[in-house]
Length: 219
Image (cartoon, rainbow, N blue to C red; front, side, top):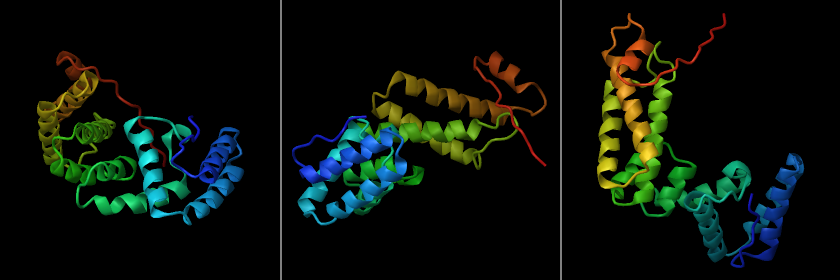
């Protein structure tokens, strides 16, 4: 975890954030939470220019540079409230990078699609949407062959159309391309399956690796 060391920010704010990180790393979560509450009260007294600088640093480091400012990239609650409030007004406009940051940190798939539709040429927005589509398809398949967690076939159609559009416009990582197309093919196979034969064997015959996840039901 990288500690705060940004000359653009007030020293007292950085010291408090670093104390929070130190206590959290030591497993002293109550003490860490008490520190972050106090330091963010101090943050609230600062100027709008400092707010903008803080938000820009945190979001750029976590979302764009993939720097672990906080444990497991998870924002402390007190920080997430401030960031959410500051970033949300940019969402309806689709203004970048703030709208993209909000979607990555707080938004759902529908919000991400909306931002992408306004910024189709932005690679970072397209890649985040691709990750969201893969998650949707992965989640949708996690009860195969018992049932699909997608609402209907049209949801699959929309995901495929959107994903293929992204792949045509952007140079998305090969691994993500393969994962996306794997799940599309898996879902299509599931919907063509008669429900009686061995689904895992059907996948194997079609060149797809499939391992059923065991499900447990309790009365």
